[in-house]
Each structure stands twice: as structure tokens, then as C-alpha cells.
Amino acid sequence: MRALRYKAAGGVVIDGDRVLVLRRPDRDEVRLPKGHREVGESARETAVREVIEESGYADIEILSDLGHQRVEFDYQGNHVIRDEHYFCMRLRSSRRIARTEHELQFTPAWMDWDQALSELTYEPEREWLRRARQAVQDANPKGLCT
Image (cartoon, rainbow, N blue to C red):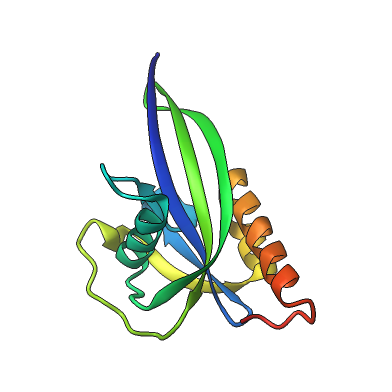
């Protein structure tokens, strides 16, 4: 089995008490937006670019750094080692951009925290959601999202 290693970055995007997820019907998945880091690109730049490309929401800002984690899995005869870096983000406006045909495989959906936590397909992404929820609660102890 061949080992593939790469870096990725993404975001947990919040809007009030809602969280952005991406449905991927062809694989029956619910995911968070993320993608490969390009050469010379920082994790922050990757995260913002990937969230915009995959969701179509063009007006987001980073609120906090959620850290990184290594995810390993087997896929199509390869052992994949992915170093992920995520950020908590806020939707600043509903302004949208056109997405490419590749990104149209994702259908953006807004869910409350608990629904998103239960519907995300993969445990590492549920961990990012838990970290983002804690960061929001720490920043705003009265429970009001920014």
C-alpha cells in the first residue's frame, strides 16, 4: 500500500446559532469545507479559499485558530496521512460567488450545532466542530454567537 501525505485546511463557519456543512450526495456524506494547501499558501489562506470555493459564500472572516490534527485512513489502495488545520469563521454577509462544476458536488446547508455534530460523517470533523463550539462559548460565555 502506497503512503500519500498532504496538508489541508478548512473552516467551521458560523452564522448566529447555525453552522455551515456541505452535503455530498454522490458519497452520502456531510462534511466541513476544507481542501489541499497549494505551494506557498498558508493554512489561513487555504482555509479561506477552500471555504469560499466549496460553499460559494464569499464574505467570511476568521475568528480563531482551532489548531491542527493528523488524520490517517486508507483510500483506494493508498494509506493517506493528512495534516489538517482548521479555523473558526464567521459569515459576514450572504454574498455568493459562482462555483465551478467541481465544487457543485457540494450542497451547502446550515444546521444548528447539535444537528451538525450528529450528521457529520467523519469523527475528525466532529472534533473540529466541538473545538469551534468551545471557542465560541469561551469568547462569549453568555452563549450568544458573534
